[in-house]
Length: 493
Ligand code: ARG
View 1 (cartoon, rainbow, N blue to C red):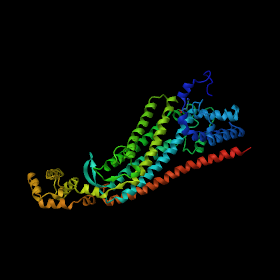
View 2: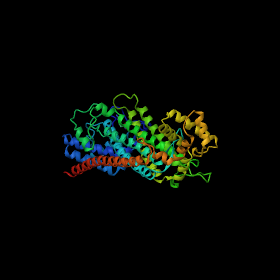
View 3: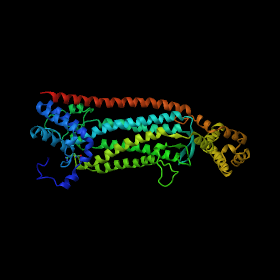
């Protein structure tokens, strides 16, 4: 349809190669909305008569209700497909006017922005649901003591609640990132034309308003060439997937036979075709892999966009495949992770047992020795290090089983004046529970602090929920209003 200068038809294989029809089905809905707003605005500024406007709007409505009418074979993309169907239904003298003041270049990025805007809201809601489930687990497990790990070696005593809250805090930042990206996405590029605007005084603010955007991308080159906000969005998704991949890794490790801290519900576990005893965490492994898929999508897009000159180039079409995949994968991953979290079975006894015998308590003891006795932390570190060494050589006995003589020997070897009896008493009294309840610093797994963190997080969560619901309502309201205008216009004589 666009072949005015090139002679004849595009070669079939070439058309196949050029076509973005497969990816475009995801923006069909948005392309229709954008076209409705454009046509109403053209009528408003006196470019289209009421009759022409009505004819085009009726044709657009028909496509909305019967997308099967669209040809997919001999067109380059959804924009061409829709325009050619409108021309077919209304004649070229009317339908051929729909593209006045518009190009596929501002059209495609308009559609992308509208879809990403909806995707952001949906993903934000999914994050909120997941955080809600994590906060519930946190609340239920404030007293669930477990070792915390660095280098995947027991480090300090903590609680399961503290882990759940840490995932929630990461997800809050992920949520906030998307929340802010939305502001940059929610601007209309429509009316920028091919690259340099139009001699027609298009009312860009009006189309923006009709489509529920907050403002426009003003510069026509910027509006049609830039994809930075789309990259930013995919970066946000990649970071979400990284957060989820950390959670999956923790859950996979903690649910091994060796750890046994967690159990993943049977409903979300797979088995083996060969080994009858197996219960594998396949959903978590796939989630971990999909973090790779989404970061791959991001890098595909960055690599495509790198060094494209200003102004639309067809390279830009190629990012849609990755963009849609990144959105769909992240949405699904958040949903699956929520199922997993909600159904996690927490083996409190096993965690308690691992903590009770853990040398991780030696950090608390080193701090206690240092503060209580005015000792340098370096010396206290030495005392505890040697005591742990001793306990390990005594058949890996827990520190509380050390004998007074063992302690005296260590203290003497360091020339310390501390009483071995006193040190043994401190060791015996510093059980894991006491370890966490005496943790004073802000943000540590002290049960009181965790209660506060759960409460604060719930407050934040409800604030985000309200703001996102409001955003959605603003878009819905604008689009409902647009539909009303379309219907009114279609009914007019
Ligand atoms: N199918 C194209 C895309 O997805 C639409 C824009 C085409 N514009 C052009 N001047 N060839 O990006």
